[in-house]
Structures are given as C-alpha cells and as structure tokens.
Image (cartoon, rainbow, N blue to C red; front, side):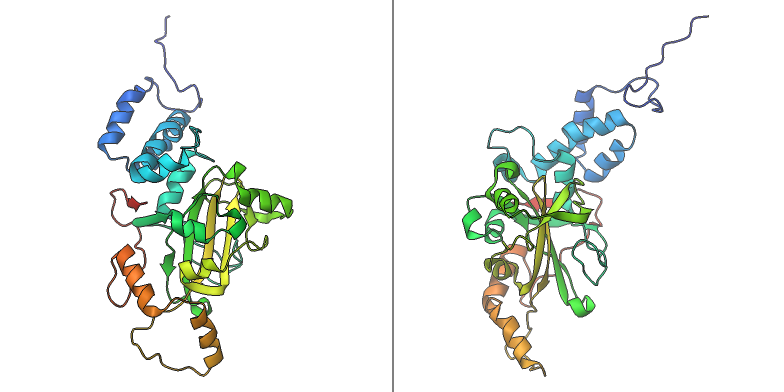
Length: 298
C-alpha cells in the first residue's frame, strides 16, 4: 500500500503543518497588508518553529524598519546587516515597557507590571545626555520616560529604554570592561535575555541625565546588556500647577529637589512641544489598548 506523502515542518516533529508551508513571499505580502501588526506577528510565531524563524528573520525586521525607519537606517549605517541581538528583541523594545518588580533588577519597593506603549519617541539627543563625557561619540537612542505616577514612597516613577549603535565597539562597553564591572547576579535583559551591567555601579551616569530626564539626581539607575539594550528607572520631579508652590515641613528636601530640575516654564514648554500635553503637563504614556500597531517617532 502506497501512503500519500506528508509534508511536515522540518524544524519541529510535532508541527501540524501537514501540507507544507506557504511561500515566504506570500506571507510577506499578507503581513504587509496587515501593516506588520506586532500582535499578529507574535501570534504567528507561536504556530511552529518554521513560522517563528521566519518572523525573527523577516517580519520583525520589517516591523522595525516601518515603525522607526530613520533610527533603523542609522543603526545599520555601520555596514552591519543585523542589529545587535535580534530583530524580535528590538521590536519588543520599541513597543514594550518592561516595568519593574519588588526587589528585582532595580531593587525597587514598587511593583509595576510590564505593558505595551501606544506611542513612543526615541531620541538620539536624549541618549547622548545619558552618556559620560568620555563616551559622547557613542550613539544611543533612548525613549522618553514612561510615567507611572503616585507610586507611594517612590513618588512618580519613570521607566525608560534604549539601544546602542554597534555596542560591541562602543566606548561605554570598553569603559565597563576596563573597570571590571560584574554582571548582575540574577537578572537578565527582558528583551533578549542577555546579562546586564549596571551603569551606576560603573559610576558613569553623568549629571546631565537628571536634567534631560527631569528627575532627581540621586534617583537614576540604568543597565545595559551585552547586546546594547538599555533599560533604566528614575524618580520624576513633580511639576506644580501653580506658580507658588505650597511649602512643606521639609523645606531643605524640596530645595534640593528643585536644584536638580529645570525651571518649570522650560519643562512645560519642552514637554508640551514633544508630547502634545496641556498647560499642566502631558498625560503619561498610554497602554496599548488599540489592536492596531503603535506609532513610533524618531
């Protein structure tokens, strides 16, 4: 008895694709019509290993190039055809705030769940302000802090993320290695699962970071992984709704905070121009409730 030939996925013996896979060009046209929807790409990757490999190799790459074309062009301008890490990790970094856990990477006392961000702006200028003077020739893209307000004793928490261009040859990596900074003992990068270095432990967080992030000087910490993904946390300085701030019992503490902040008028003007906020300041970044893909400005 002659049995009909079965076409199964060569990457997984348990795959149910008994009739073979669609042509890659067909799949590319389908997802192009869907505007590279990240939710659908992630669902598609769970079908089998062949689909997952195709999504890593093609779909996430097209998603990144469509959402942040200028940034992707700059990240690949060094001649490399592969972003450090992989495209799926970069795609997740563009649209996902990893949050923080109590006693986790940032040793924080608050629990902030990870969530998708509806709109994100990555800035090379902001990234430069997070680099020490001796490393300002490195290229770092960082997003505006994702605001999580009224977190108890932690106050208003800002979480930010970014990516280095050509991190293996960057000056930041060279400084970290020369200082023999150890890896974090237990935590790994939430985007690519690589090990992490603490920039705070390396003592290379400049004073300009608190000004650009509009945060307290002694409440900033960020990590960088082996693939150049950066993730950090800061305590945001409050913006008063009135010109006359209400005095507090701890006046010395307030004066110290105000010294680490930009003037209120400048902060409001800059944040409103970037994020389209009102006179009292813009709302925090929204979670992704719309099933359509997010917008990313660079």
